[in-house]
Image (cartoon, rainbow, N blue to C red):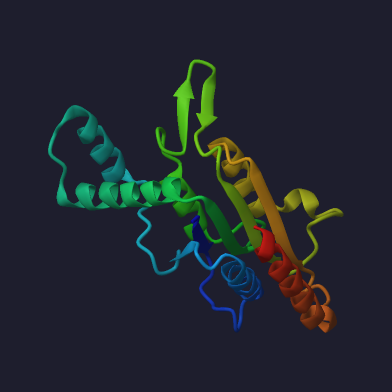
Length: 208
């Protein structure tokens, strides 16, 4: 039985969001094909995702020196530990985001920061850092109002690219993407674009 983290970063649900609608189609198809697997939904807009701030840095330092942590330090460092342990223990990751300002919502960056922990998702060696999550797989479902898969805007897309860089850094050997794009550029085609993406997501969910 595999453990899947279904990680969504959108304030809206599938009734409004193209990425969330496509993500729901994917994960429901996956569940149908893999009924014994455990799927954990992490809604980043509802979860406590601490930012790496002064409390976190001081808390980490105190853990190394053996000093007592303040209540704020204990709460933030403890929560980051929970998130990184959960991430490392999973087998598969499904990221769902929109493309906002060429990237993704800031809650996704905070989450990726929380799981990028030496000794859990990667380790330092004499040859440099190497990823520890070498038996995992990941997919990113992303809605883009314009066209970014090719053409002049392709170099401006930094959301999918960033998640891909992080997965590579963590050693994840399989990283794919499902894109819903062009619905704002061509609103008369929006419904068809959405339906096509949902169909692709359902097929991909069967084999993920």
